[in-house]
Length: 305
Image: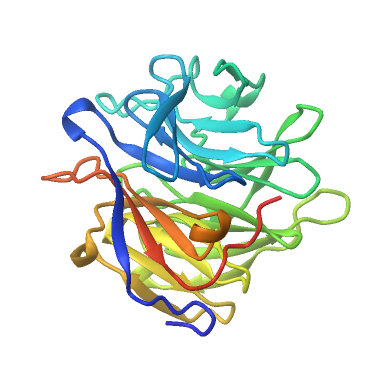
């Protein structure tokens, strides 16, 4: 394990879900008070989980929206990347897919123009309030400006998928903002790439942060204060940490209770700020164990914009 990201090996279940009730959490994020927010992929819900593990449904999306990535902006407003994916047909529905803004009353309004995103998957905000949305099927990163303009911000071969894992291309996936650049995972290529955000808002030249067979199947990512990248590798049931020099360490495996981990987020508050919360998506597992797990990693997460 890399310096500055040494876990003490402690991993414990935090919240269990009921697969028989369709409770499959896909994404997790944290607010400044330490509450977690998870997207329930099949149920079209967003739930808040407090420090005791108590759950509250805070938003209901349209039926078939099939929410994935969840993030809060600097004001605390919750945003959801909804895939519109139908598990039965394998198709996405343009009438429900897109990025939704959740109001204080729990209402979810789709941002106009985001239905153009082929497969809205994960979200990140920069320090100017612009949102970036990964599109693994489209092999692109989209940008939603503060004005609400939706643009296909970057299309690059390093963001494309191959079609070898799922039968259709699945590339750019997890996304995080860090010091003027985006870090993006590529599921099928087994990559982490860095994309500078130029002063004029355009994308700079991509660089590869890490590339390895043990990153194939990578999904959600999160960064600590040292810039180490924590990766939920859905396809291999592992939690990895990647240092700035590309060195990769294994923090947890299926033996530690991982079941198709899809998302990671650092805790907040004095008690949990050195902990990483990991979502077991568990969809498609023979004996699914959907959970939020808590991993002590010993360093704080990088503050989100």
